[in-house]
Image (cartoon, rainbow, N blue to C red; front, side, top):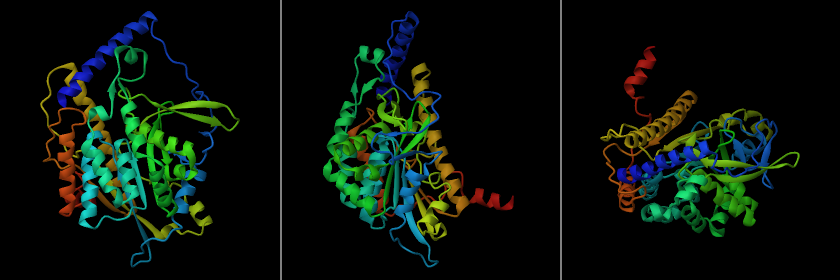
Length: 414
């Protein structure tokens, strides 16, 4: 995998040099956009679908909070204190490493203790895992097939030098779009609608690149719209959530203002801003809305599960003393640190609220040996590791690394 990544990074640096030269000479062309104006202060929505998404940091009470409150109308298991416990699953990105999470989910089904999750969130490649997890254990075989049979050519195709210089990405995402279209069909959408109406929720994250906002999409609400537009939107969001900037082209969404003006938004991989996310920020200021529906928030308590398709400890490699190798390794380090930071934040929130926290991640003793970005054999090996870990009874981590018994004891003495 290292040689492959070094190869495309070398090409990338060469392209950056060529583009810089063209820009200096005034030869490069920029495709026109009708982006939302920089000084725009109103609200824009997807045309015909005003209630399917929200900004994570400023949740729309009419959209996402209403959807969440309505989901709690459905009955759930009650503990001995009379509190309804609802399991929540948050799945990170990770590219080919998603094979571990896929294997763990299927092994968890085999082991027998996998719960039916009330709410599932996913970002980047984790959005596809989240979709299958939402559909239930009957879709485990399809989940396995996806993460143990694909290769790099099934996900991306190299652009020629002219498309790279005058386009917006190194690779074409057409193979990935085709793969998503083959997965998401009418039958699958009907199953998503069925689960949504049972009170379960599936949320997928993308990044609005213009606004630098993390956008959360209610995939069940989209499926419930029905028709071809709903199907195309569902596929488009999954594609956007997995569109790594520069590698894949951004995905454009047409939006409309309240006054009727039409604009476009550019969305990229949700992992650009969040390695993993849960609903903690979406529930901000929900108490009033809950009471309108006759729901007492104090009677509900989430049980948090985080499935991280990455390592939580340093993954040692020997780095060559070259610009390309140092750049690639540095990027990997930044991404891993950001993902771990999101997990620590979620743990801090859970601890503050007294919630049950559970974390799974790729064990440090699994050493990858990929020959390409999506190495089928390595993904099969990683899937099997996740499956075996779960079948034997996965011991979920109750704290992230660094929050062990010693740390908690130190906190109590402060």
